[in-house]
Amino acid sequence: MIYEKQIALLKRVRDLTEKGKIKWVETETNDLYEANMNGQRAVIEFLYVEATNRAGADKQLIQIVFPGFNAFLACGTEGFDLVVEILDAGFESWKQSLANYGNYANDFLAELEQQ
Image (cartoon, rainbow, N blue to C red):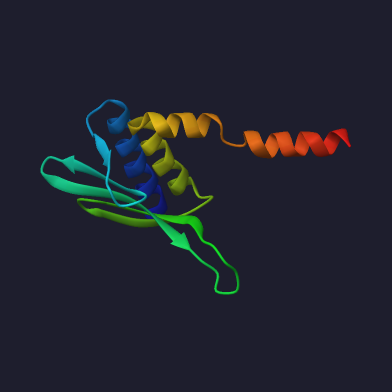
């Protein structure tokens, strides 16, 4: 029940962003986006997970907060993908990045197939 409500709310935010009703801005803080929703602050932030037995970290979680809503969404889930769609709707740089998603991996696999 909560899952369905979260997905419905995220779809509404995506749709309102596509219509220009919600305008997101990228902050000076890396991977943090904000919007003003009728005087209320909304935030999308990528959170990095680092394994203690290896170097490096990657974006594995997103936190999205807006009035009446707060969720942590894991990479590979429908909710995570919807937040990426929200950013895609709000930023040209996200559109370009998503259009190229998987190209390097596909090229790598094609090269393996040719061997």
